[in-house]
Image (cartoon, rainbow, N blue to C red):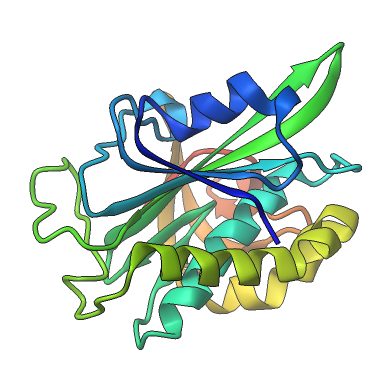
Length: 234
């Protein structure tokens, strides 16, 4: 069972674990009621108002070949947990969870190096649970409450962690193949024209498949291309 530390307010659950990972056990989870400096992917600000579930997980895997797939496992675990409450979410590659095109969850993963080696992975997660109105956050977003699900944040967190750690060791050992069928089933963009933006540049094409590494395979005007990282734009 994971060790869960609760804080009323933190600057960032992510920063807390990165600063204290040497003193904390593997699979420690830090939860904050609010964050004053929450971050998303590409250093974007994550608005962490009351009602959301904000947590980070400290992982010290013995094998580090498949760190990106661990992040995808977390997204899938959140997706599967939401499904238990009658919601029909989908995955937006690589690790966003959406409902009807609105963001339910965002995930940030950061590897921490020590003595030239990866010492740990920190997964930061923000899930919209009980907010009543997310119209001000700057992108289409939705909460579980707005979808008609009223659940204690602690209960939703435990359900997510149960699913995540059920498959964690297998993903560490074998990678994306462990979750490929379940991930693909919840990825509705295959066969569709999409764009993937990384920085200021974007690649456009038809989403063909997900690779054995969990990367996105596009058929572009210039031929097939494997996308390692970026923001998917429909």
